[in-house]
Amino acid sequence: MAKGDVSTYNEDGVWKSKVEGSSRAAHTGGTKAEQTAVGKKMAQDRRVEHTVRKLDGTIGEKNSYGNDPNPPKG
Image 1: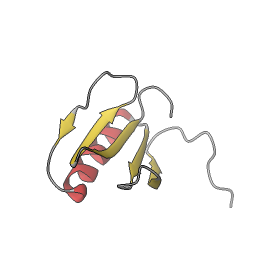
Image 2: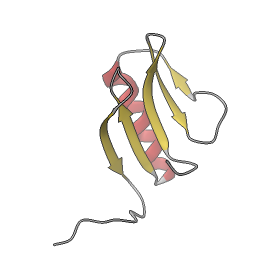
Image 3: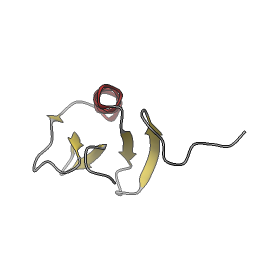
């Protein structure tokens, strides 16, 4: 992920949203849905990519809210 992108993930049973490149999460707590909404808002405000990870750490969802380097064709 590029610096400044937002990631929503679970760490030790707590859902967190973090801006890549920062040393700690910007928001913590709540359900996955609540934290995903927080992360989405952060990404939209910054016009960056938002990645939501599953409990096992794999990428579950990825959305771009800014200048997408690989926009869909057609």
